[in-house]
Amino acid sequence: GAVVSQHPSWVICKSGTSVKIECRSLDFQATTMFWYRQFPKQSLMLMATSNEGSKATYEQGVEKDKFLINHASLTLSTLTVTSAHPEDSSFYICSVTTPATSLGADTQYFGPGTRLTVL
Amino acid sequence: ILNVEQSPQSLHVQEGDSTNFTCSFPSSNFYALHWYRWETAKSPEALFVMTLNGDEKKKGRISATLNTKEGYSYLYIKGSQPEDSATYLCAFQGGGADGLTFGKGTHLIIQP
Image (cartoon, rainbow over all chains, first blue to last red; front, side):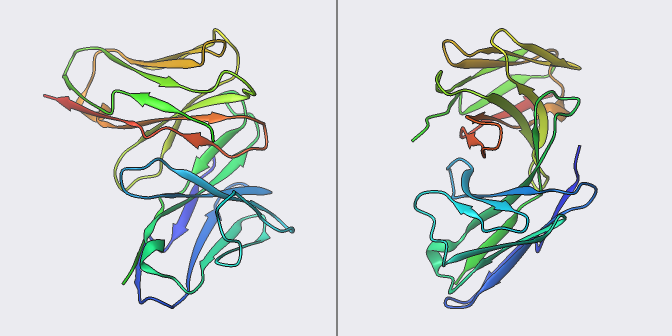
């Protein structure tokens, strides 16, 4: 399957600053990547679909001006949390969708995630 | 809002015993059901992608079944080993290009 990396693995920032999280597909050219987040004791929640060369599609309730997504190449998508506040503290994780693999239908492969803490 | 439920929330199993847990999901607008194994500080590992009603898939000691008509899937682990300790996630997918809707997971601890 696809190998996905994320950077940084954790970040602490002050309220009001912006933070950029990178998601890289190391061995697969991904036209579509997904961004999820997970709050404590909650499930992973889809935030947005990142499409290479076009605007991202955001889920209901996710502010597109706050969570800027750029998918400028087939191997890199970035999520920028602008003017971060403590309530943005969460675990952010990305995935790459690949065509049908040995597992069967299209499979999503995940990065290891980024823990964001906003003070 | 799609509802994906997993039970139990956590499970302690003796090494060598077999175990199973459940994922329930909407029975309409179904495209696929995904199972992942997630160990702390690692990427979730894709175990199975299931699309057809009645599907049964196997990977070593782990297997899964799918019932799309009633909206549930079971994951079975035979002869549990300490390395099976992890959180097992299921995720519903309503369309081929869609993101996933996850359950909260089943946290499995295998006791030696």
